[in-house]
View 1: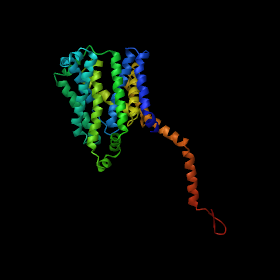
View 2: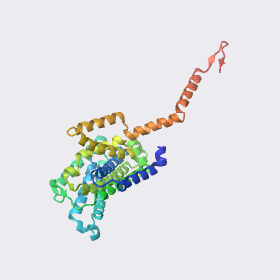
View 3: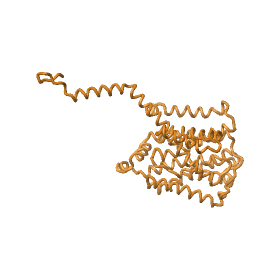
View 4: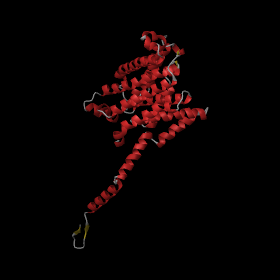
Length: 354
């Protein structure tokens, strides 16, 4: 906690600079740049989920619904309504993508606000089931609408370059990390943690928990919609199966939990690590991917039940405790208590030796 409070902003700045420098020092467009871009994407998704699932304690199983809304919004505007934008924007793939991304993020945020006012009054398993039902409903609506291309989806062409996509994903991740890190150190973040720890006590203190939960979900949906809009053109194809990917819906939760739920750095590390592991396992264990990946996840959960960041923080706290003489102080206090409990020893004359 002391390290994060003192050096958190410095760490964010250094990591952002390192990410921005990679294309400059030799990371070229192709497989590896796409891989790193996808790692940024999954880090955004994991951190977005953790804002409501880890910081607030409301595990959502419908986060990919907002991803799909963002993906379809960008695909439709980019493909079918580019002429509605100013000519300078419509003629530049990057500017057009940025403009459609803004609309995608706003629509996802609006959807989260409307849905959140209803489902965030539920708790526990009821909330989780409700969010999963919403995801399935949104997917089915997209499948049956003509404007979305139905089950066939939409094919997208003439997008930005791979390097531009790289910086877009990196930029979204940096902005989200800065926003979440700032919010978690304000009253807003403290209230979210209070809701997670004991919502009934938070209500008894006069906190409008529904307002804070809805606000957190809307912020999470904003970044999920923005990254979904970027991904649609990055992938060059959108349909109901890819936009509302059920496997991703589970993976992003696993990423947050494995990295360290309820932290800022944990979901980011989980997004990087698990996606890289998935890619490597697919390449090395063809046909056995799910078995190997499941084994890795199980082993990580057993060895690091609080996530990687949680395990590191616990170890660092223990080292800090003993570095300041905690063990010696504890033993000294134990000896003093024992002497006091004995009350001294009685001598042969009936007195006491103090």
